Length: 328
Image (cartoon, rainbow, N blue to C red):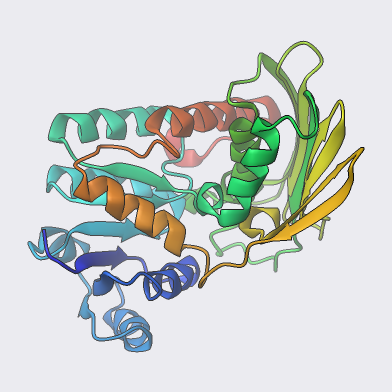
């Protein structure tokens, strides 16, 4: 492997800028190649972040023997085919969340990654952020006693454009896959297990995607996680962990938080752990570490965790009657 870790990037859209800014803060890595179906867009993106090669061919980038790994940042609906092509070519992959549109697709990709002996990880950056390390310490030390309830929201008022990926069913739009995944993934991370059952309600809009969803996940013995996600209104966007002896608040925007507050009988403690750059640098470093060590997955967000979240999202979408046309 090259001394400097060489990344390829497919899909230089909005989220890809966060990746590129994070990558610039990783000392032994560089953005080596960028691919977009619009080559001018690839050139414009590359010009902002160095001297990366540019291409209008995803296939050409995937075949480049100089690359150590590929980051995929296309709309959700394209993830499965692109990840599969990368794995077939023996390329390690960091793919934006959600890894796929449904659990069946994820199962195929994880099986292929094992067969090809290639690293694959869902790029859910939240779990790698420094403040989440502090929250985990508080939980493991029992600073709030026994966890009893989780409560969170993720919402903003999105411009109503039927062609935008958020509202376009052909691009696997909707609130749950795009933003609700954070509420689910952090809940799973806090509790380290799957719910026994759930209840959910949602609003499927005129374009056929879920614009709003509220759910209660029941983990048994009175332990619950309640959350809502919406494209229709601005919400508090924080994450609360309530225990028998106190509470933890992960401040807005919880999915990219730098601050958390612990409150218990000893008083209140607020910690700040700023990002070095965009916050994506931590998941990049984890992916590189795993690849260099020959691992096929990261212990921070293993394949089983991604699959568990995908299965939950499948079930939640089914409960509110939301299904994408290409799933039929």
